[in-house]
Structure formats: structure tokens, C-alpha cells
Image 1 (cartoon, rainbow, N blue to C red):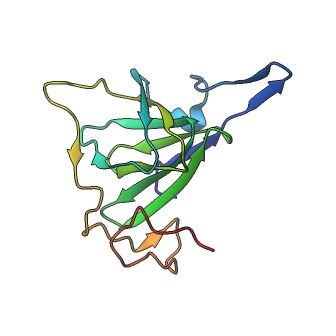
Image 2: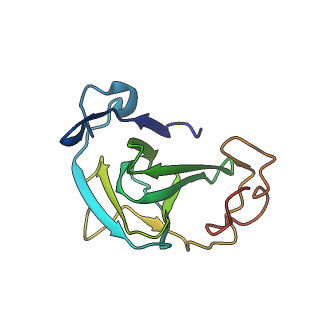
Image 3: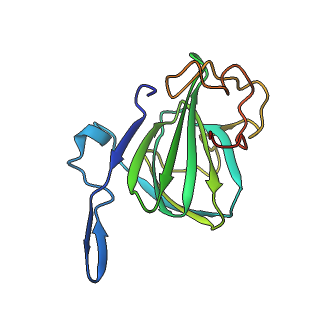
Length: 167
């Protein structure tokens, strides 16, 4: 796992009425450390849409929670050429801490829109956004390892968000 990239499974408390889950607690030091959440956002994205790549160069960290649907969330370290790929669904709640200096983005998997709730450690500045972007299909983004594996068949090739799942 890339340094600082953290996945925290969330506990779901179910009963005959439905379920309850805590999404964020200030005492989750294993996840938040010294980060302070200052903004919450929600995004709805349609099936097969890819929202990538971008990064934050002024120190923002993002925390992602898939509330509906299924997402393939990726983070890429340009220095080491390591890529982490995380599948996150509303059925298996988790919060993913993504240091903003990694290139990151996501693709909606399946046939339903996905709803993403995300928290940030910096306020969005409309006049001077803390975002650097590159195309979702950037041919120069070539991982040397994926999830720590160098023998993944996608290693050494431009990242393909639409590569079919392994059989």
C-alpha cells in the first residue's frame, strides 16, 4: 500500500429496521492522525464514467466513502510508479484516506450510478483550486507495480481503466 493510503473498514450495525454505520469519528487516530476535516462533498457518477486523474499540490488529503454502487478507486505515486487499486462498494462500507499528492481518481463499476461522499482537509478555493489534472487515459501513466505486485499483467503498460477483470 502506498505510504499514507489507508483503508478503514466501517462497522455496520443491522437490525430489522435497516442498519447504522459511523462514517467519521474524530477519535479514529489510526485513520485521521493529525488531519482536520474542513469540507464534505457528495458526488453522483453514472455507470462506466471515469473521473481521473488529479492531485492536490498544497497538502490536501481526501477521504472517500462509497454510499451507493461500486467504485474502482486508484492512487498513483509518480515517483515510485506504484499504483494502488481499491474496489469500494456500498455493501462493504469503508473509508479510504488518499494523500492528495498522489494522482487519484475512480471509475464507476456495474450498471447503477455511484454516490461518493468525500471529506477534505482543505477548503475548495474557487479562485485558485488546489488541483493539477491529467487525462484519464494518459499514456504516460505506466505502473511498475500494482497493489505491490510486479507480476500483474497490467504492469509496464499505460494504465487502462477498462482492462477486463482477471478470470
